Image 1 (cartoon, helix red, strand yellow):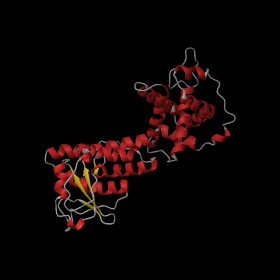
Image 2: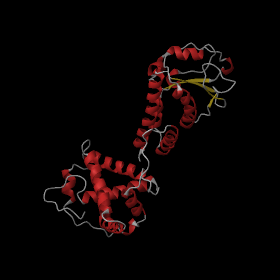
Image 3: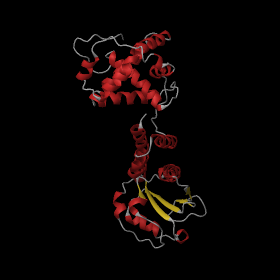
Image 4: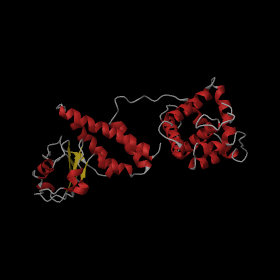
Length: 321
């Protein structure tokens, strides 16, 4: 699972919350509004390193302020209303106890871009720079987009726990994950110098499918094809045609994605989709991401040689299936 995929998953979860807040608010159902206060405590603390606490349930509750970071001298309002009047109403409350604190505003359902260029009455002298202190879902997603993969994964794990999708699919076992687990146990360095491919001219297929960057990956991993043939043989001992189900799955992934992509982009989209499928399998044995991506590349290149993915040149003889 790569950076863009983690970002897409984060975007999906936050968008669901944003939409529900908006729709339920119009129906005067405010349960998601209240939940958002607690949710954004954990979310903003994780994203920005704050130590915010929700003060609305305490005796110290002050109108206009929802979250407070005492150590960081920061106060924040969470709101489904994104207007200048809403911000000035918050700043106009009796916030004298927070003079010198930073003030931030989090719009939980509406775009707040127009509020970042405004000027605001600030009678208690809070530190408020609208251009950087007005958050909305788009702005926090932009922060997530530029994080490294490890940070994105932590944020996604948090969102997954806090914002469970109603239609979330349970993890299932796949033969694809099983074969990746087997490959991970192989000593691939032992076959790197001895492997060979006796098939049609791969260069013809590479040229036909307009693969340039992916051609280098095919060149790197084609030497493992004979060993994958042996692995499939061992795999089939556990059940009839198990290897066929893996190859069929790879082909279906290729056919589905070929309707939207081609060339190098199609190759990498196939790898990305297979990585995601393996990681969502209950029988997947967790391994470092770079190792998983290598094993998936080996499997996809093998499928390429077998003509299970990408168009084959005329007259090419299909390798064992």
